[in-house]
Image (cartoon, rainbow, N blue to C red):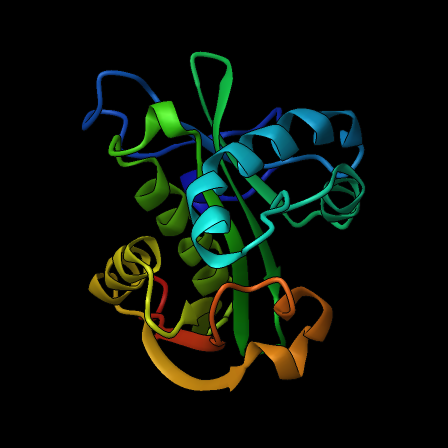
Length: 198
């Protein structure tokens, strides 16, 4: 993948470093570095406070430390760093031989609107494309009526080429979690066709 090849922490890629006052390093976390789980878990849960409170009558953390450990050990965690601090994260895996999948894209609240989410997304799309994946997918919860946060999130993804493919009632997928929702909610699968890697 040249400069954008995903590596461990010793090989981090520089993305758009001339577009921001600080260099952002986006890289896959080494599967052996599960000791980072508490720190990354805290970042993700802070990023999702508003979304969780709007969606759920009894909000809970977006992810647990145990789940984060499993994500790291599976080699599925990508993070963004600035000045030696974690400022963003995403879970990213191959869905099948044709598709990549990501979820839990998070940016630290104090770092929002600095282009970090876009840089993370560009990096994982580039990696998926370089390995022959043709499509990138994600799931998004959408309540009825839609919350302001989820509408902004949907609009952000659609501007980047992600289009809805199908939806299912969240209660059919995760009945226990769905019981805590404020309103009926669907899980929408979005997908983007990736242009061939050059």
